[in-house]
Length: 403
Image 1: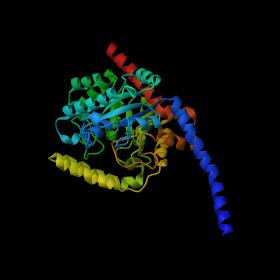
Image 2: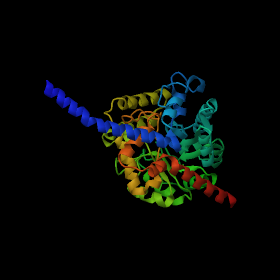
Image 3: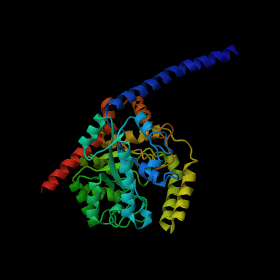
Image 4: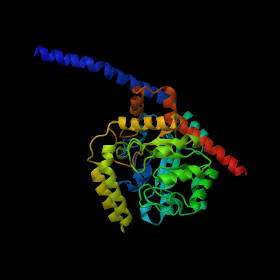
């Protein structure tokens, strides 16, 4: 028995330095995030409020001052050291019609959230306004459209969204638009962008709205990089070289990003960053997308979603290191100036262990600190790169409008 106690004691002593190192890395991460702007590229809180069984779109019935039912609320945002957020205003392309109405409803929800908690959020339209919000102790808030079907093939509607605070638009989501191909729908319809799709990109450049290539097919990515005059983003994506998921970014595109100046904001969704999880979720997602497109009623659409969610709730665990693997891979291929973070909280159900809500960003930074990342590189990842992209897009907009 004494020998067993001795062995146990040796084990505890051996573990102590590792635990101390872990604590030191987490303290270091929190201190770093306290002095920089952590800027996340994608959070689906507005659609979570709209679909919440209690709130049903009523912001007053979804109290963000206490622990909310989803991944996001103000106490956890503060704990996570979030300084700026692109709030996703998402509508399913599978609806087939009524996109503008639902998009405006989503924008209204997002803006109401920002207005109802002025001590926590501040609507921002520029990089400097993001910095001003941070100086005031607020989370700088911009809107991002997920899916170009929202503009209903109308450039004037695109301009109206910009005026309402939208600062990026994803060209596609899980369905093709009339002018751009999605990564999630086969076969391709346009082999990238149509001439009108190229006009959309040019008008986004003129407005100062970032082109978001998350969910776009690789050919759409390549076409957009060819046409755009401003840096692009992927608001929530992974590296295909780490996990071969259709919506992740292939190596040849990553290699083209430095010339463009854009940023790939790495998602935390287990099914996109963990190849073993993807083997389960990708076929399920394909079935869901087909069923969603075929659904003729809202009940059929909800049933398809429930089937997918049931699978997502019973997945094996994903370590936080899988997200770090994607970050490091993109750094090797594209460079540290071209990486950011786009968690996709409140838009999915399967998260890495230790990275399942907005309070946990420091844990990811601690993982990278343990891997030897410098503060300078971590500051670029946190938000420095995204702020630089915003400023460059603003400069392109001024130049184009001056013409």
